[in-house]
View (cartoon, one colour):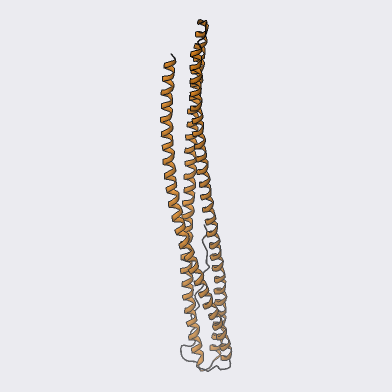
Amino acid sequence: MRRNLDESEDAIAQVFEGKQRLWEKEMEELKRLYSSKMRQVSQQSQRSQRTLQLQVYKAQQEKRRLQEDLEALQKECQSLKARSSGLQQEQDSPRLEETKWEVCQKSGEISLLKQQLRDAQAEVTHKLGEIFQLKTQLREARAELRARDGQIEALRQTLRGAHRGDREEKQQQQQQQQQEEEEEEARKAPFCPLEEEEEEREAGEERPGRGGQGTTEERLRAELLLERRQNEAQASTFEAERQTWQAEKEKVICYQKELQASYLEMYHKNQALERELRELRGSGGGVAPGADRPLPGLPWIERIESSEI
């Protein structure tokens, strides 16, 4: 009977070891797949970040250039306004047509700057779309991380259930063996010291096996904790990058609003200058034919609505 119990314990131990090796192999495969996915997402995020930083730098350079052009145009508009004031004293001067032509030319330059501003806005919108895509990838990575954590937790629960079942089965076997030994002791008057020594040796062999199982379980728990901390660190890095992109986006939006205000101010000044020129032309006596036609209106500067994620 003891031999049968030993054989059943060996068979149970072999089955448990096989299951444990299978679980360890599955956990290693899950770790490898998740690490590969995280590396790919991290590399793509780094490349996108470098590209975005370069394009933000180009946008800043373009901002400075447009601002310099705007200041130059404002100075020219002030100069034209001063010249129009002088034209009020020179009603029949041919410089009126020249001034009108310069105003039209400046209007064309403003239209060109407006188109450049639209192009810059489209580029910023494209970059915001890339940021949104990266945020989507970050959410997917977090969801996958939570799914992996759930799988790992399920494996841990399965491992605990297996340990618990083995312990209960061993306890039942030990109780049954103890009852049989008590019955055998009751039948045998003299107790055999040789059998007692053998039982103590078998009990001593069972205890190290249990200790090894506990060590393996602790090692698995440590590996799971390390993996979870690494995943949390990766998520923190993604969040810091997202905040950096958000700050850059706010800077670009602020710049767009300032540029819009400057364009509107320049547009109103040009309208005032155009009215003064029309009044001056209407009060003149010998102006050239066709001079009574109104100047073409300056293109309306549309309001810039910056899209936000």
